[in-house]
Image (cartoon, rainbow, N blue to C red; front, top):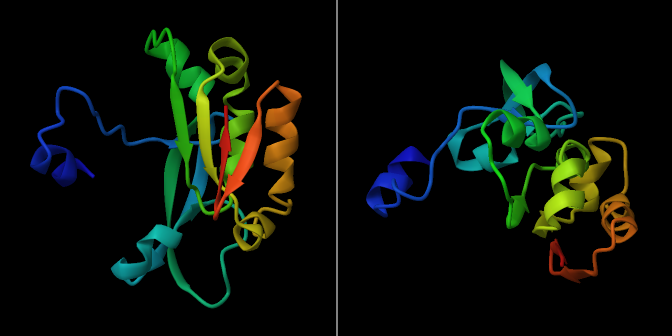
Length: 145
């Protein structure tokens, strides 16, 4: 990520922060999928896929609400979430931001990934519509405005 930020000369607008986000502050197991070519299947908590190989790391987890409060972020315009099933936890940790700023939300909608966390991705739609969002599916994503 940091290499891509530099290559695209985005240092003045994009900052990589070495934190995981979820529903609550603390530490959690992060399952890093190997080999590197499939590292996008890595996930925070949940039940990793049995057909993949993982190594684990202990990582610091914060919530979007806590991070915004601690860093005096006054407004969030967009939330893009692709956490291999952890999308519901990320949204639950962003309830203040969702209510206050009503940002555009783009989140992965994948039943297989959500199942690793014990929920159906329709729970994302229910949560967001309950907050007044209009939600539509677009391939494997939901877009909530």
